[in-house]
Amino acid sequence: MNYILGKKIGMTQIYDDTGRLTPVTVIEAGPCPVVSVKEKNVQLAFEETQEKKLSRPVLGTFKKSGLKPFKILKEVPKLSGVEYTIGQEFKVDIFSPGDKVDVKGTSIGKGFQGGMRRWHWQGGPKTHGSTSHRRVGSIGASTSPGRVWKGHHMPGHMGDDAVTTFGLRVVKVDADNNLIAVKGAVPGCKNSYLVIRKTTKHKRQIIKPIIAEQKAESLKKDAKKQAGSGGKK
Image 1: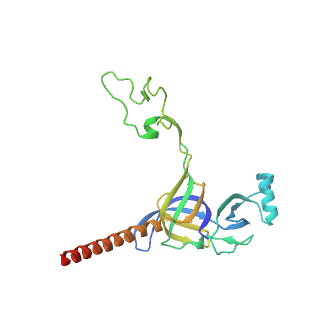
Image 2: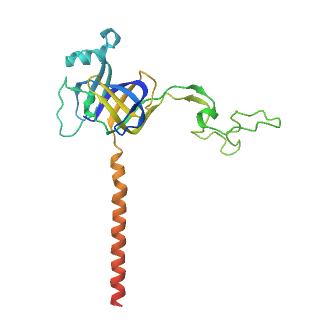
Image 3: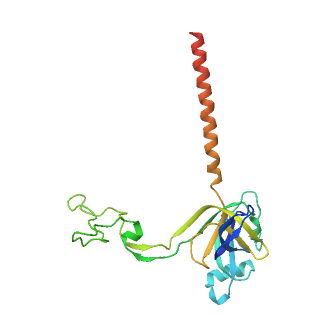
């Protein structure tokens, strides 16, 4: 399994295998039982809860599978060639130190913010009688186009978005306590729920050396052709 559900515990710092003090985020991940198996996806659950805290449709899903009620229910892609069974549990031991993971969560909400904080505007003049230090100012011409372009940077709601942090290195795995420590920060506040998966970026990192080798081979072939043509003349 490449996916597991978890909850952000907080940040701390630990010594890694090389002896360096590394800032890490501690995540409680799993155990995640399989609730249902579909054609392309698998439903995973996380964190047990009481029946009265769930809606009837969600509670019916767990009763149909014969499992206890869980708070979080999430669909993740299946691995090709792997058979899944209802009730099968996935724990944090699917990862090991040194692995790279992607962590998806909901960023911290900032409420309604002005343009300078939301979009990092430079701001207006601070002296000579200016009264528009942090104001929006003109947002478009009146004649043409006669409207505001869609997507214009304006004050508004900030944060509370789905954010994925890619390529975080797993520093430590505590399978007994269902904890995993990854280097760096992850989206969301404490006790927010996360989706952890094995990274998908390593494939892109392999492309660059292959392209460089192909270019080098093509240059060698061109040089041989030029040398051959020169010899014939």
